[in-house]
Length: 379
Image 1: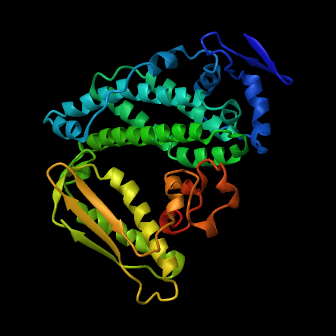
Image 2 (image 1 turned 30 degrees about the horizontal axis):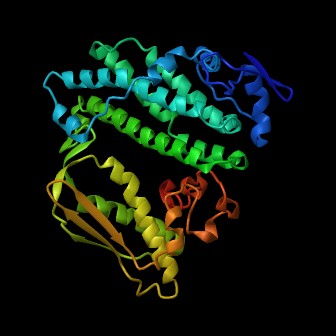
């Protein structure tokens, strides 16, 4: 079905809901410079896959089928007790699981891109991420079945390459939504999209990194004590907190010239099996927030600055990490906003335009304001 919008021609495939528009390649090309005012720079990639990524805007039957399948969830317990086998067959089973699972999860994300508002999905940066996922789906779904260690070796290399290709996705999404913020009429649509996208992205990367870690353990030089893939069988919360406290203090000292101390209290001796990776995302951001608030609240007395206190509580089922600071807190009227991607209490570093709809806003700023790409002193 052909439809016209202004002077542009669009194609609406029969399988799409009424009223939804699908971009044709010519329109994709001409829309790009108009969406954000910046030229589109194509990324180098395999030509056959690149051609299919554009054609797939018309014919996406394979993606449609995969997107209808449910993903097969793995818990940390399942991953841990899958264990290791002397003949390394556990590595082959891990690759075979990814072989079936990754195309489904990538297809779910492509479906979410399709449901974005039309003008937002037309943004060149967001469109680039969309095409990146389409390309990844083709590479994963067209790979020959993993049946032996030779094919597992090649498949693991493909997974490594795709992880590298997607390493800047969060930054690109931040840029894309920032560029198209004036076209966003309903923020909840973007909020829901980002919730699903970022949660899924973390899950995909954890599964992929777990398999890569298992693969590398075939080489005795890469074996980490007390680890099964990415699962630490003897994880110490105190050690992880202290690691990220030291890191956050370095960033804080780089920014302000001083930093509060961090005290760790509670069940400091607790050790249990867990995946440290999510904590590696969460802890530095929370600690940087606490240190920033403390430094700005007590900037006139850096010598006697109050400590940031981290309390660990643990039982047979759960563990809790509480981070307390004397940074002045926040007004109750903004509590409903604190989980929004575009919101921050760091007013001095926040673009005033982000009071409205600024996509990812400052939370995922591409600026690396600190050592080792540590990011800004707020989240």
